[in-house]
Image (tube, rainbow over all chains, first blue to last red):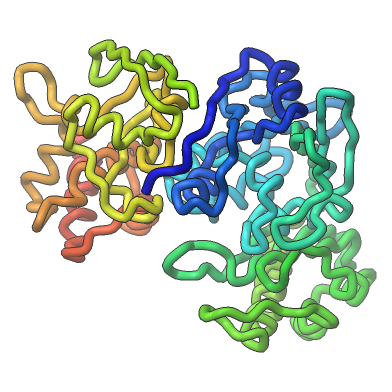
Length: 284
Length: 157
């Protein structure tokens, strides 16, 4: 399988990359989604600009009480970052669920976010973390909430000429427990359903419940009805089950040859409860 | 579309060629350089038969363009044994444990197993199986492959 012909630039700086992208070139990051699509000729960009090796997009740093992650950081760098494992373990844990060793060596957080595959893992995690997504173009920068960034299947708020430059996630205090739980499609490893849970527990009462969902429908979302049902409650099995059953309410669940809509809804309920239990077991 | 000159160090030797940007790294290795150890299995980044090391990281060379590797150091299965022909401990373990039947997946299996044990020198069997997740053996000879990785880890590969 050979891609259609294209021109390729490995820019020396982010400014050079943004100028080229502003003129219509397409960004290439790890290529773990784009290159297979190009080989199948589902995508035929005329000009690729390689962001994958730009030092300016490759960092993980703590700044003003938050963690800033450059878009070109790979999944392997996320899963092996002691800074993330210590201060935002959910973002490191999620990487271990993706693909395989080889894919995690190449694939990037920014690439996954910009691609917005409805079965990708990170959108659920970023929803639960209420991450901020920094977009840049040759003419400026803007910061969006995860909620405002992911619009629909393979559709984001990115405008032509913009790239995902940085992801900002919170530092989690000790009282917060997090977990990502996923039912894998056995052949591809993609999420049939993936649930990220982030919960604070103090004196037997739940607060700050955040549930991110991927795979169930065309786009990731926060299950605010599950969150509301648990807010201020005690973490009993009964309460967890009752709240988890609300995860797919009003959601147009996807159906394909792997799973019917009803089965996906069932999986979402089961995996929401699993993610909540696992998050609680990790909260102090 | 404009061809580009790339310069890559492969198994210790510097290589410079003019390539089309759409040339995949696996085709560059096999067809331009004649290094046919890395195999083309599925071509859809699922089977791992094309696995090589790029700057010390195992990657699937069917899912990368050769131009992306410009300036990189690449290690293929051909470069794993030392110059005097002494096999790498992972190769030795695959030999000893008879971790192959037809051998098609073996170069990729060895390259990813090398990475696995470098990162986790004492893997459990579950961790070995998870580490081999991106490599398929259609002879389904997985048990002997797991045995080989375990033996190589024990031998300090």
